[in-house]
Length: 351
Image 1 (cartoon, rainbow, N blue to C red):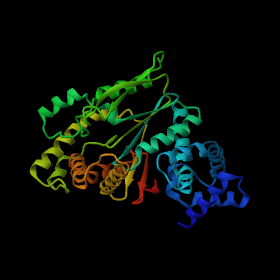
Image 2: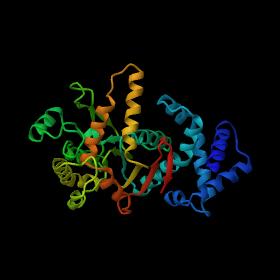
Image 3: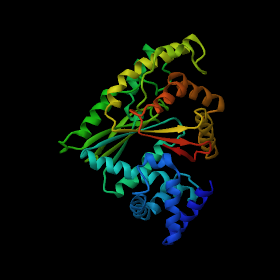
Image 4: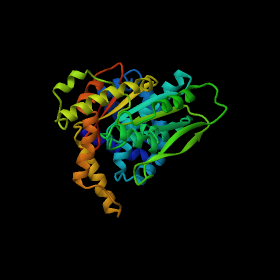
């Protein structure tokens, strides 16, 4: 913690003027202290100074617009923003830049995170930085792939358990594959049409809206609450976890596990997968309540605590984080980077 406090002070100083030689030495020392993070971002004693010099140039370029954007989104402390920028957002953006350059084609980068973990914020920040590196970046949420309102109404008649959009089976997987194939195609004479979803349509039930036309996409950031999640052994549900308590709950979980198989062709298109992993998955319930409370304070309508509990637990019943996310994180063939999210939503371990 003392090192992070020193780092925060250095970055705040740097934000205003040049660093001293002692401060640069402290940056290198702090960088090398976290071995897991160094391994994740391929930093060692031999290349540390070179990588920090490249990162420092980018830091000076993007610090002001990043701080401005973060404050517009409700971030309060500039010191925290600069710390996140230096420790996570910049090295991750530089890694994605290197991947794209090495591939020589559009790179498809998955971002997996539950409610409140900050996947949309991460995607927006990465886009801002990567734009400065000369890349055309697009963000696609799994929410953008929802079936139309009419299709979901028909689906709900077939399976009344699908009371909310979101679980496996409520998306158009083929649409997602078509979009990604279009991004990967060498023939880009026509704009790429990214599907977009209006969650306010039909009194909050949501429906497709006008696609966004983009001329060229160098990097596609594909984010969502179960992007990359794999089916698990069905026998796991013989000893389920709360809130999967009844036989009906177990069957719902089994059916969602089965529906996941249809998404595998989509996950196979990912060049990497980043996982935002809270130290306790139950925090998403608390974070959702805090978000709803802020909305109410602004005069907007929001769900009650009881409604939030039912809503969040519904998704735990569909794909329980302990059953699906925990084993995924341990699979190094599928996950490239894990970012732990602390209770106060600050960044914990990066590995």
